[in-house]
Amino acid sequence: MNISTATAREIARECVRFGMKHVVVCPGSRSAPLTYAFAELDRQGIITAHVRIDERSAGFLALGLAKGLRAQLVPGPVGVVTTSGTAVLNLGPAIAEAAYSHVPIVALTADRPARLRATGANQTLDDQSRVLPEVLAAYDVPAGEPAPVAEALAVAMGETGLPGPVQLNVQFDVPLVPEASDFPWDVPRERPTILHAQPREQDIQALADALDALKKPGTVAVVGDCSGFDDSHGVVRGMLAGVPVFAEPTSALIDLSVPVPHRVLETRGWDDVTTVVQYGKVTLFRPTAKLLAQRQVFTIPINVEWWPDEARERARALSAERSGTGADGADGSTEAGHELRLKFWGNQPTELSVAESIVSTIAAGSSHMLVGSSNAVRYLANVPLTGCLMHASRGLAGIDGLISTGIGIAKAGQSQHPQFFDPLAIVIGDVTALHDIGGLLLEVGENLPPVQIYILNDDGGSIFAGLEHGQDHLAPYFDRFFATRHGRNFDHLATAYGWPYRYINTMSDLQAAVDGKQPGVYEVVLTPDQ
Picture 1: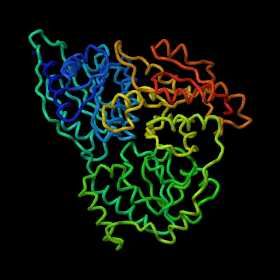
Picture 2: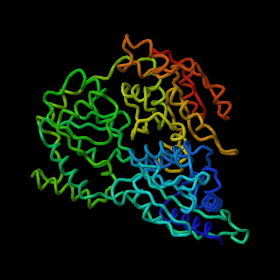
Picture 3: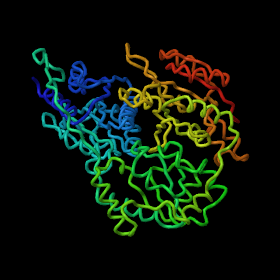
């Protein structure tokens, strides 16, 4: 057996040994040793391999798979295999989103031997292990040497802090393919070592400080997207009882929130708010950002839901010791807390816009939804609660890669969680869809993933009209440089990629599509003023 094949097989086995269940493979010659290794594991049913031509879509598919596993409470690392050169650079957007949303992706990037660096060799980046700057750790593995897979996956899964992406950059020398005598490769079935996020001392202290702050009069809570760490019955839910909560719509704690919190903050002010407790990444509304900038803020670490019981008990005990209130934490029945909560409690709007009604209808009829980062999530913020489980990419809140991400979330199914039995509703705008239209490309023979892709087409980036760019004196520049009108529909694109397509013209059409739960592309045309 040649050294490249031996190295790749050991890496693949170690990945499985430490909990990897999915890997996304992109075609390439230098990465062939890894491809053959994972292909054999896939053939034997030990791992599930997914194949994508475009590394950019592959990265986001891996992101979605990891997000889907976490949402089902079975978190695990997801690998993505690429060849050398620009293939690695194309992982950049997905790796950056993974870093800021704390998702454990393992970039398995193949490289040429170090002797070929700085020589002008084909498809050779001189320092390929450093071209993905957002990874938590990058390992440059010399040709023929063991790869630190266990260490890399421990970092990815958060054993030394929060989870996130890592890179194993593996140098492979020729020959790059297994020999005939290397088959069959009988891989023993092993019980995987499950890696979990672990709290740091500063996390436990931060939780205790937040608990103290929640006991003070004049404290409110701001809850953003928590990257799937929050659980509807978790410790944070109990901590926030009795205080006004301003939650973004993709938070699992949205049901604790005052209705339409951004409008409440914008119209009522916060003169009597002295302290803010923040949980999750808050990215959506300017009134909330202004509040965070002008008040003292304490932060609840987002991985609290995944802490061992003893760590949570230690944090509770520390808080009780410092505050003298007992181990149960904050008392939500205090008169000051009750009055402040009532002051901020608003009313749900009785009338919705056309776009908000569309999003509300989809959410009400869907078990789980991936909502786009532009207008779609802002429509969602104004509609009544539906109980639909929400997914989002709010780490960097970009609009790229969302079709691939949604497909990954859906493909991570296979759990007993009832909300994953139905197709995932992906609700995005037209510009978002165009950013990742290549995400519709599937393998030959691959079943259509269980997703319904709803494209709200208002012909361009209408979100900019609601920002400073919509001012009258800027109108000569708006359509071309910001709205970017494209004049396209998605029927031919969907058909070209082999997806069923349906044009939605009425609310009854929309309701029928939602109720039918058939995978496909559903286009809803909006005028810019809707």
